[in-house]
Image 1 (cartoon, helix red, strand yellow):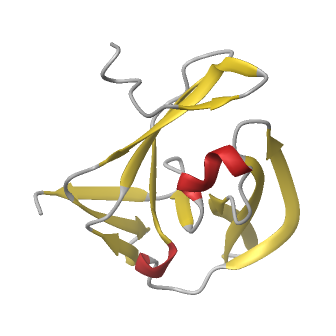
Image 2 (tube, rainbow, N blue to C red):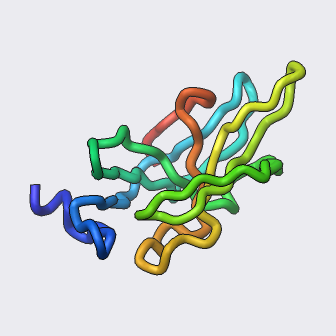
Length: 130
């Protein structure tokens, strides 16, 4: 268990709220319906624990996202990571949030700067050996 938490990023005021960023060590392709929107061999798993243990999320470098994503003015705040910006996909007469990023993360969470996470309820992931 200690090895899993090695390098954990912790909130200074609440050290039990933490995340660990680990490489996927495989190639990750993100698809929105039948369209490839991102492809990376530098993706990471973000594992977060706070009030609960959150489901792991795949983050990847912004430069590995293959389509332009529009943002919405809405943001949310995480006391561990900072303010999240949301990216949307427009189609079928509706707007869906498909991804988020911490463009200016809190100082202790710099390791997620420049990374984008995709909502697993909206996109699909293909994870293959590198």
